Picture 1: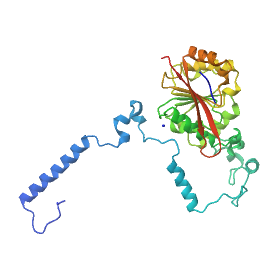
Picture 2 (picture 1 turned 180 degrees about the vertical axis):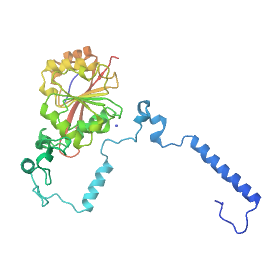
Picture 3 (picture 1 turned 60 degrees about the vertical axis):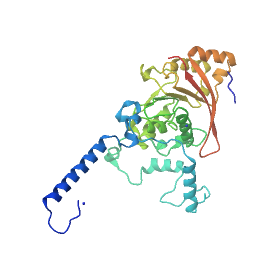
Picture 4 (picture 1 turned 90 degrees about the horizontal axis):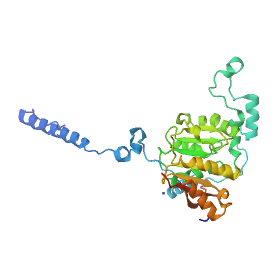
Length: 328
C-alpha cells in the first residue's frame, strides 16, 4: 500500500323529476366510491412512500436534501449578478447606518452595548444567553488560516463520499468553532452529531455563539471537551457511519493517533462506515509502506485511497485519505 500524492349537474331549465335525480345520485355515489378507492391505492408523494422511510421511522421521513452545488446553481447566481449589473468594488467601508470593522464593532459593544440597550438593574434581565463581544463580531471566523466558507467545502466532500443520510451518526475529532460541524448539525437528525474538542475558546464560540445564532440548539449535538482521544464518554453502544479529522492529526503525536484509531475501530460501522483524515497520514507513512499496512490490518482497517476536493469559492483544494473497517 502506498499513500500517494455521488352535471353538480348544471341546473337545467324545468323541474327535476325522480328518475334524473336517481341517476344523478347514483353517479355522485359512483364518483365518491372512485375517489375513495383511488386514495386507497398509494398515490402518495414519493417522499412519503414506505420505500423512502429512512431507518424505518416515520419521524425520519423528509424531502431529499441536495448537498452539493450544481452547475445549474452556479449559472443561476452568475446570471442574477449580471442582470443586476453588479461589479465587485474596492474593499472599503460602505456608507450605512454605522459601518465598522470588527475591531471597531467590538470597541463599540464594550463601550455602548447595542444602539438601543437597557441600563441599570434592567441591563441583565433581557438577554437569555449573554455572549461575549469577541464572539458577536465573529473574530473566531479568522482562526483557520483560510476563509470560513471552506467549512462548506469540507462538508460537501465528506457528505458525498459517505453517502450521508439524515439518520447517520457522525463524529468529528476536533470540531473547533464548528466551521464544518454546523453543516452536519443542520442536516442530521437531532443528537446525531458528536465532537471531541480540546480548545476551550473554540468550544465557547461553538456553544455560546454559533449554535444559538444559527438556530441549531434544538439539534442537541453532543460536543465534549477532551484531548486524550478517549471516546467512551459518548456512550458504549454508539456506532458511527462517518468519523473525520480535519487537520487534527497533524498536531498530535503519532502514538496518540494510533491509540485513538484503535479505540475508534469498534465505534465505526463495518464495511459501510468511513474514516476520513485530511492533509496527510504521516502517522502511518512514517512507519514505512509495509509496516503501515500491517498496523492498519492489525486494527481491522483498510486504506481506501486518497481524494481531493476543490473549493467552490476560492482557489484551494482539500486532500483526504479514506479508511473503512473490515471486521464486524
